[in-house]
Amino acid sequence: MTVKDFAQKMVKAIEKEEFEVYMGGGEVLGVYLKRFFPKLLHRVMVRRSAKKESSNRN
Image (cartoon, rainbow, N blue to C red):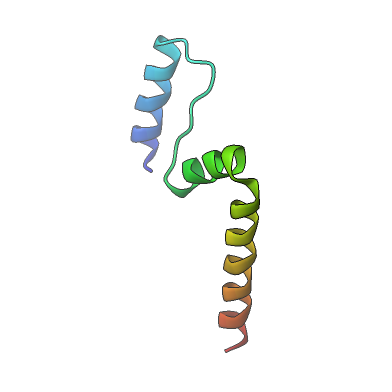
């Protein structure tokens, strides 16, 4: 996300007086997964870290 995009979304959120604003791609998905499916998020993160470790070894 560019700085300009972020600033536009932030200004819009402030104008609407929103309490919470989620910006980003995968981060937003992570927020909802943690809220509604915490075990699923944990499994996804464990698999992701395992993939990174195995790719770093090669």
